[in-house]
Amino acid sequence: MRFSTLCLLLGVGTVFTVAKPSDPTSSSAAPAATGSGGAPVPTVVGAAGITAATSKFGAAIEGAGVDVKGNIYAVNYDGLKNSIGIALGQGAQSSYYQDPDSTTWFNGIRVIESDQTEHNDVVAMLAVDVTNHRVLRISGPPGNAAAVTYCQDAAMLQPNDIAVTDLGDVFLSGMNYSASTGDLWICPNGGAHTPRRIAQLNRTNGIEVDPTNKYLYLSESTNGDGGVVLNNVIWRYELTNSASGSGLDVKNGTDNMPVRTLFKDFSEFDNTGSTDIDGMRTDKNGNLYVTRNGLGEVVVFTPQGELKQRITVPFKGVASLEFGGAQGTDLAIIGSCGVDEKGCLHVHRVDCAGRAFSGLQADKKSGSH
Ligand SMILES: *[C@@H]1O[C@H](CO)[C@@H](O)[C@H](O)[C@H]1NC(C)=O
Ligand SMILES: *[C@@H]1O[C@H](CO)[C@@H](O)[C@H](O)[C@H]1NC(C)=O
Ligand SMILES: *[C@@H]1O[C@H](CO)[C@@H](O)[C@H](O)[C@H]1NC(C)=O
Image (cartoon, rainbow, N blue to C red; front, top):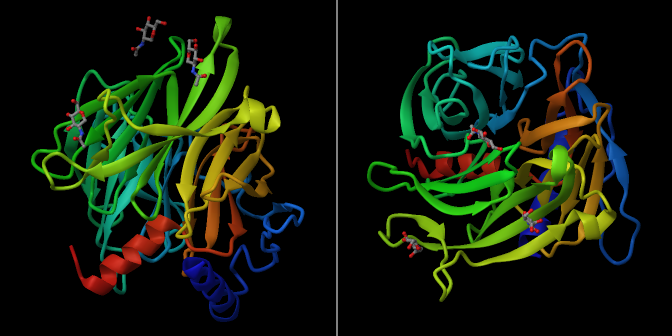
């Protein structure tokens, strides 16, 4: 319970020190989840951040990445597949980077370095390029960033989304929707980041590391005949030191197959197996936030797999999410508005900062870049 206490203290500090009149979350007064001791699990509604009327993002808004200041980045800025914008925080609703290659199709993004002191100017992020089966490393200030290929393999399905361990190992999901096939790849931290396929599954999408770096969560969706979605599950893979010793990797069992357990089966859990899982993120307590794309909902599970909370947003196509804001406790939930081909963002104040945000604060303190 040590981390839990830390998060609650941080939550109290948030309320008294950073809420500003212009803060979209300050009026939401979201109740904290209880979820333990048999108390009812609350369904809560957050505050609007970007609506169809105000949005400069297209319906394929995805990502989402957070920097050390809590600014949130998302793709499909201006409705362009090769464009990343700032969605929340300093410079919100402005362009961050547009790739000169018009075939580039950004989807999942993660900030890996963020040394912002006074200005929003030293950020490095990894963004997947669905079309060209690669990950780009983009760095520099907004409007003046540059990209290089970080890892690439034509055999990758897409990739769709990305997770990064504290040691810099990159895990990628990806799918072929019509074939109902999916992938799990690693671009290791060491060497030339040469990609390696870890597993082939049905469609994979949401992917996230837990804050202890012991587990990798991966969603798997299954289509039946005619593309009808039959089932949605979350696997929890065990991580271990990589064979090269320079980072982490998925652990192999005695059969040399990845070691994993079934974390959640939505057909059994709440009869929503036909609704796709999309982006997933953990907070620093290890709670797993899961988007349900089509239900307008984020479901939160404790590390033990118990339902902690359901967060409802006013658009059904919930695609991704990330914790931002000055304390990393403003959960930005993004997805298609469902009207005018626009991308929406909804903010919900939570009681515990996100894993990615917390990791960047730790980097800043240790000065490790
Ligand atoms: C996806 O699978 C279908 C078969 O269902 C195949 O025809 C198509 O080429 C595949 N697409 C990609 C991008 O691999
Ligand atoms: C993956 O697809 C196969 C073939 O359709 C199916 O038998 C299997 O149950 C699916 N896996 C999950 C986890 O639903
Ligand atoms: C797991 O097995 C794969 C394939 O044999 C191998 O490349 C990888 O290094 C193994 N992982 C670990 C952690 O040893």
